[in-house]
Length: 405
Image (cartoon, rainbow, N blue to C red; front, side):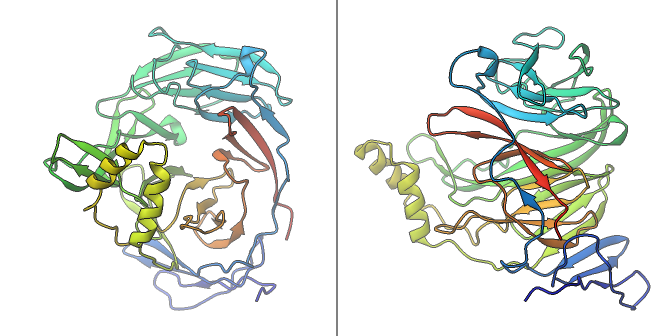
């Protein structure tokens, strides 16, 4: 039952006293317990029940949709990897299909195109580039070329300022911290020495780079996704159904690193020390063979009957995972809040998102537009992309109203 107060048991370091917290956010019946463990803040949260919703509202339709099937090529988007909304309302889209950054005004009118294919200053490579785009120090913009390990800086007018090379083996730019330090990661790779038939788990390595691209701190390797290798007749590699995934993003002055094996979000300092652990109650469920069979039938439905029979034979001895992932995607917003998507179990409806405040205390649930690949959550908007049944991509801006109580 929903109440009109948020009761939070606050256990402070060195004290056993509990205090009630007056929240400026949505009233909730949820309880969060905060404690200190050897200098690490640990936040334990109840699991929100379906009726505990934030009073915030997302419009029924996007206020802006950029993308077209034909006409002016500037509006024909392909392989949109990222987008960001600038303080003046412009939207910059990383359109990897053409190797460009495309700038649009607040009404969706194309203003300019920056970059292009090539190896020159401010240009991007041939594959999945630009991979990301986002704010840099001041009013500048940073765009990454993942496979070339380059980050290019543009001013607010799209004039290229400089490009620097990331140190090997780091490719991905996950976000920018204060002072221009960059949160980086490698491409997922197999665990060394495991190439026979069986299940393997990829790993991702993370680091913090200085503003010039030089290494500031190596943060080590972390588990990513499970894959099944069939090596009896050559080598076939299959994604494990319901595989887990790595989690990595910037959270204020901290970085989130981990996986969705457990409902536990670990935030680290840029030097690699654990600063905060956010947990939420979660019901563990294990995949059944029927779940896997249904997944494989849908995944390989377009194969011929003979191809599908061969695939199923290779996957016959693939082991089941012990549990479904504990959650789906993770984002942070302009307030420093944490948004965590529920994992969509087989046969279940589109999941909601759990929203935590900047300290990691659960506030409630939110429903976001289905099928939206989210790039950015601002103070009053959500920016993402969708693809229709014909594969036509659009970048959409959805108003977010946080005034509800």
